[in-house]
Length: 59
Image 1 (cartoon, rainbow, N blue to C red):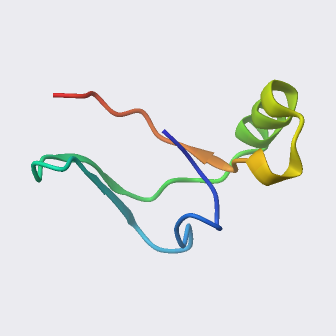
Image 2: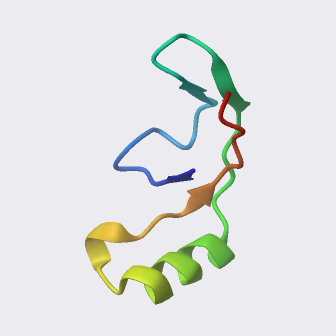
């Protein structure tokens, strides 16, 4: 799941929860230049730039 500071405060731990309440991720979502570069290459839109990415496993 890709995140940016417009969606969540990446200076704080992030908690990703399903509608049923299952916790998919809890912790720090680190900003990386790789994630930024990938999102720019994929979307080419300033509004779609993501700086953090975490892997989640859907139940």
